Length: 166
Image 1 (cartoon, helix red, strand yellow):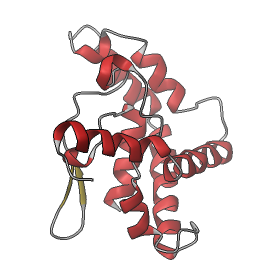
Image 2: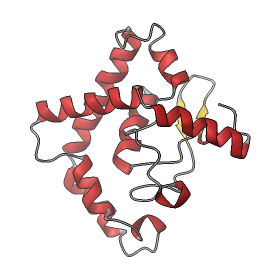
Image 3: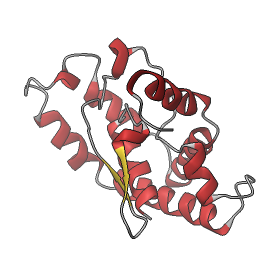
Image 4: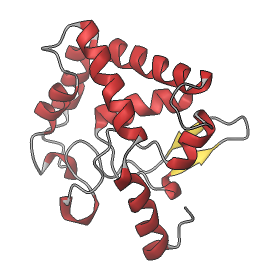
């Protein structure tokens, strides 16, 4: 459940730098993300745009959710269903979410000094789509995160540069 919640939050915030040093697992198995220094429009390495997945779903996380690797395990299907429900719930409060982010535009935070963070958030919420289309959209986001090569490569880079275990 926590993985699905973070998938939605990470996607909406466009959170980057999601290497294993920024992910914690509590004793009850809940996933906790830390270090949100790269959100909305900025990413490590001078905004190279290397992390292409909508959210981090590492190979190890996928193995726990989907041990057979066919995206049909009960846990993976539940994760996908919860993530889609969370995304659809977030869309219902689009105005509030966008308003909160827009209020911070003049804050001086680095994520507001590059690109168009408010427009990007609106785009990720896909307001032009029907609920059914938005659900299908987020299902594609989940599949894209599941198959993301750059997620694994980023973990290897973090290991080589920072010694953060993969």
